[in-house]
Image 1 (cartoon, rainbow, N blue to C red):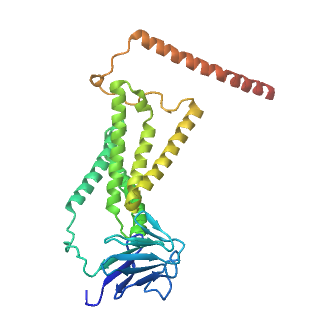
Image 2 (image 1 turned 45 degrees about the horizontal axis):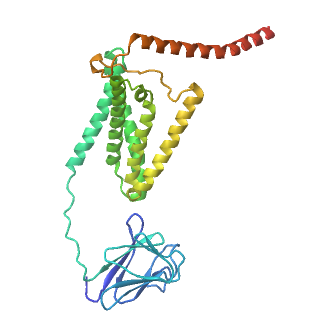
Image 3 (image 1 turned 90 degrees about the vertical axis):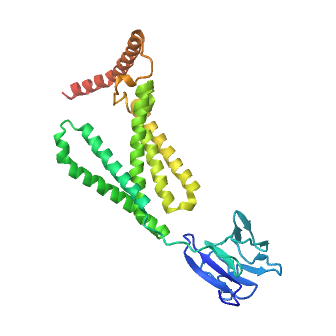
Length: 334
């Protein structure tokens, strides 16, 4: 920095992009939207002369808030019109939608950073995530097909569809990231998508296994709701790439939407089936050696089966009047 320059003022937007700067050659300096200000900012939320920055003989930087409605924020502290406060080193002011930073001439600068190298570790994680996703899809298809020979015929199209779907999903998130942060981050979204799919499947398998081992049927019956929660976590991770500084707000937003979705799903199941879950039984049976819960005595099993029979009979009885009414309407028509 050449002689005569006392400091450097830099204004950045929310994404960290530089929008204005000023070489400070005298104290005090004014900041605002008017052309009479030393540092002119193009922000409709900034007053004509928003603040005045000065430095005392002891070297303390002070800020005086001028004729402004929105004031100035330093951290979480808000300073209104007519107030004056000290501006600590390495802190940023918020005025309008901009951040204002100050670097004094005598302030030390950080050491030079080395140029980034090829991210081998990141590439390895991406490859493992994609391979795990493809292996999951192939394994699920192999388990559902009745003839293993069908897998060889369907495999190319299946893998192409999965790859295309993942690329489109990650591409849309990458475009949003580019819009807000000016960085694409495509492969990061690919890793999040693949890892989330693997995590959701793992939770589903563990829920079914624990339900079988310990007779916790609820874990298996509410598998769809667990999948919804896993999808909410995946969307939250995608959003944190776009807006990393708003993690707490994003967590609250995604959690609120997920809770509303769960309530709507459970309410729909209750109105349609008079139960919270749309699954009546476990869809997967594991080897008996994995059972940890004690066996149910035969009399208890027969009693529970009888109770189920009574409920089914009552439900059929409730539907009989409708059937009779339908028969009557048919006879009248004849």
